[in-house]
View 1 (cartoon, rainbow over the protein chains, first blue to last red):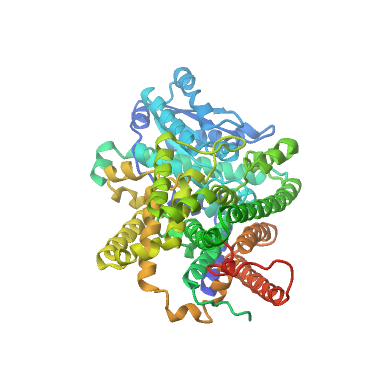
View 2 (cartoon, rainbow over the protein chains, first blue to last red):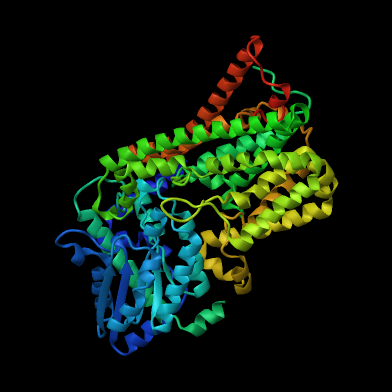
Length: 248
Length: 387
């Protein structure tokens, strides 16, 4: 037990000493490119990458600087700096209190208006809070993935935030499992925000239990999410369909 | 200590129900490192199946005897009285839950979790929320098991009646209801949307199977269950299930599960008691019966006695466990949530469950010695205390 505590302490100290970048990357082993993103790969080749983020309230931050500090905007910044000769644009369609089924209806419009190569679909929390039938949640995800693929774009799914205070109140497990299964079955990358943020909390990278009105930590969390999400997108675009075929 | 071992009592029921109660408590504390010991991490089914099965077994044992001796009306009335007690216990827990959630909503603020705060919305309309809770439609997280138990008990009298007359037919009726439920997606509605997280029309299968075993079925299938062939199949299935579950925790090995298998297998539906879960429970039970015979001396050992004790007062200890898991999570978020705290809180919780069970046993013993108004029929204290 003591040894375990000592290890945790050392890791925490290490994370605290290191710069912001490596603080995020404490959780990078949880972000694993399993499936290819062929449309993103093509878009990178043609030097123009548009990403649409469709999500509920946890894809934004309130306040005057909210839009700038939220992860969709951070994602744009990181992608642009890592893909130096590509014109990167990230558009965010964020509406609070939207279930997966409600968001899924937006896809047609999003695909027509922005012609994105990739849709990042953040969902799950609202469905869990409202107690939507997990089976309905699953079919909404399936239909949404179909709609985006039919519209000539790739999908990355993003699950819930890790929120320790409300953890015993929101029964999220079923929805987490459904998202994992759909991602696996449809061969779509899943950005496991829940696991990533849990890791940050455990390692002391961010104190997610803190009660505060200050947006400082929220902004740093979003910056880290943007960074790891960019890693996932770029890594997934690098693997081609034949490679995963070999793995399978 | 009050003597707890009448001749006919199968202590295995108490032991495993007690253990299941501990596991349910540990599973209900979120982000608890100790919950890694619980069986849901190593196979398809979890402690809920064990709890529901044993509850069905003991309920049939107790009320089946009552029905034989006192008739259908008296036994039916007793079952419904029990359902009412469970309902009252559930509402009590709901009030505790409301107190916790109201406190957290008033004291916690963080712009990062604006969306998650949506869970507090129902506090804005107590008129709707409270009525829906009384109707068992609004059920907060981790408070689904007692409503399931209430509906199972409410539908139990006719089943016991049939079970006493034509056990095979009764079991067939239960299986038929399960199949029809899957076929036509029957379930009870929930609030604010969706359906019950534990579908009573599906979960009745394991309760009724328990009841069937409790009224003689166990003796009938005993030789089959103990045959080496059955045990080997059960062991193989447990291993298979263990391997599949491991790929959930190590997603990079997920591709080792062949596509045709995952297409067929997923999702493993807890709400409707997936056949894979039921089979996993059966396999676990088979292995358990093989290694732990009814007269296993360990059942009377001091080490296992605390679990036996908890299993003998399942309703009280189950409710206490739900309350303790709220309390444990509350302590973890308000004070400290490190690994040490998680372990300490888990151990304290289990000790509190044991101490309470011992207190109830003592109290019932004291009460039982005084001659007073109608005492319990002796049968009610036989298999597993209350049903």
